[in-house]
Length: 117
Ligand SMILES: [Zn+2]
Ligand SMILES: [Zn+2]
Image 1: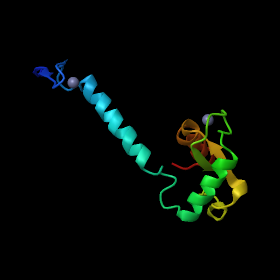
Image 2 (image 1 turned 120 degrees about the vertical axis):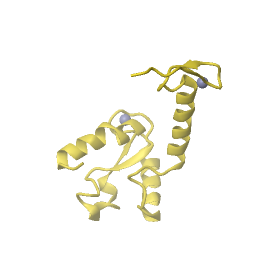
Image 3 (image 1 turned 180 degrees about the vertical axis):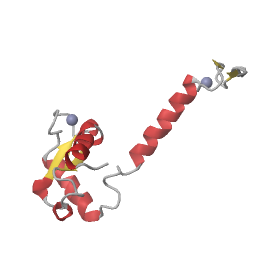
């Protein structure tokens, strides 16, 4: 297999073939972070105005992550909507979570618990 020559990135880095320049990786990450910030999280898309209002009220009342105590950025359904859609707007079915616990371990744990993917 012939090895292709490295190319020189606009920033002056010599970049081996098939590898991204660090400056490009950084730009990609920044673009993704901006994109994620402007976009409602997957679990919030299609939830409607009543949910957004309830969510905002919950975060005001419970501003910290129930797992780690970090400032909460998300409100999570304790019983997932897929399991109990009728409790979607039930204030007792809500908990505040930080970004990390809302997007990562918590959701994986839920999926395991309810056998969903
Ligand atoms: Zn570069
Ligand atoms: Zn947390």
